[in-house]
Image 1 (tube, helix red, strand yellow):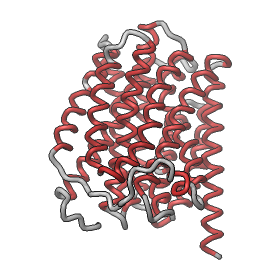
Image 2: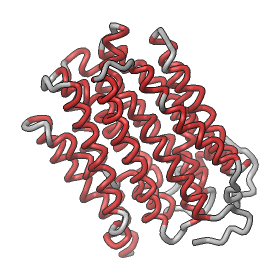
Image 3: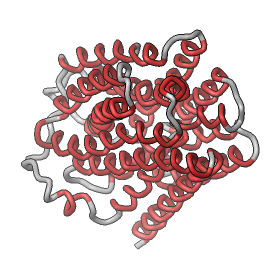
Image 4: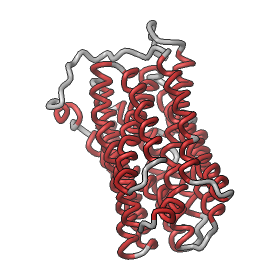
Length: 388
C-alpha cells in the first residue's frame, strides 16, 4: 500500500469507497427492476423506456470525462462529495417525475453522480493499493454486485406487495445521505498531478499506444452488461412469460453471480494475468448468452458469473498501461464505459420496438462478441510486446 500521510485511516477510506459502489449497484439497478411497473403506470412503450434510460448514460458519459480532469486538478474528495449530492437530487426527481422528459432529466442527474462514482472510488483504490489494485478493484466491485443483487429482490418484494415503484426508489435516498455525511469528514489522497485543467491535451495523453483498444473493449462490455441488466426483467416477463417475482429473482441471480465471480476472481486475476483472465471469461460469456437466448433462460443470469471480472480487471490493466495522468486516463476509460451504457439499453430498446425482444437480446450477444474481439486484440498485442 502506498503511504499517504494526509489521508484518513486507509481502512476507513476503503470502506467508504466500497460503500459508494454498493450504492452504485443499488441505484443503477433499481431502474431495471421497476421498469415494468413504470411502463404500466405511464403507458409507455419499449422505445420510450429506452429514451428515458438514455438520459442517465448521457449524464454518466459527461461526468466520467469531467470527473477525471477535476480529480487531477482539485482532488478526489470534491468529485466524490458532488457525486453523492447529484445522486440525491436525481433520485428525488426520478421518484417524483410525472412525464418521460422529467424522468429522463432526473436520470441525467443520477448519471452525473454515477459517472463521478465510477471514477472517484476506483482512483482512490488505485492510489492506495498500487501493487494490489487488481485484488481491491475486484473486491470493491463485489460491493457493486451485492447492491445490484439486493435491488431487484427488494424492488420485486415491495412491488409484489402493492408498493409504488416511486416509494421503492425513495428508500435509496437513505443510503445516499449516509454516504454524503461520511465522505464529508474524511481526507482523500491528493492528486500527484500538477497539470492545470486542460481539455485540449486529453487526446495526446489518453490515446497513446494500446489505450484505444481498452476503450473499445470497455465500451462494448458495458453496453452488454447494462443492456442485459436493464431489460432482463422485461424480456423474461414479456418474452418468456415469467412472473414479477421470478423475473426479478433472475436479475438478482445475475448480480449474485456477478458478485461471486468478482469475489473469487479477485484472488486469481493477477496470477493468470489481467488480459488473459478477461479473454477467457469474455468467451464464456458469449457462450452463456447464446445458450440463454436460444435455449434455456437460466443461462442469461449465469452470464453474470463470466461478466464478473471484466470491468475491474480491464481497469487495472489500463492503469498499468500508463504512468502519468492516471485519473484523466481512468476518466476517459470510464467515459467510453458511459458511452457503452448509452448504446446498450438504447440498442436493445429500439431493436425490441421494431423487431421484437428476441432480436433486442441478440443485439446484446453481438456486443459481447465485440468485447471478446477487442480483448483478444489487446492480449495478442501484449504478448507480442512482451516477447519483443
